[in-house]
Length: 80
Image (cartoon, rainbow, N blue to C red; front, side, top):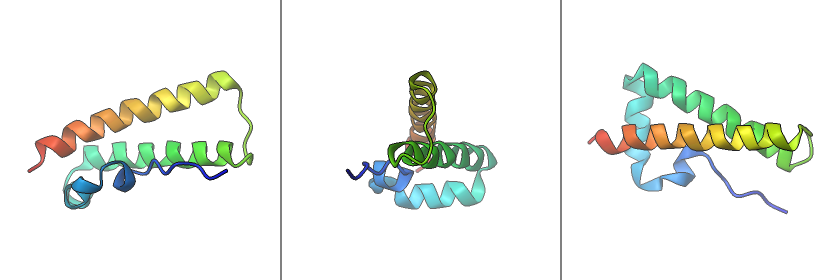
């Protein structure tokens, strides 16, 4: 079973230029992006069976990923 890719470039391909620009110019975006990327990688490890946290921990990680993605999306939309 292959997991769906949740990295920001796959989630928002239409914002590739803005992602790149904000990663370079905006420290807050950089921190959120890094945190989002780390959670995505942790969840991939769970899906691959490398890590086996409790269901509650997995749910919290997914909620955090969604919250971060929402914040990053708002920043991407406002950066034109």
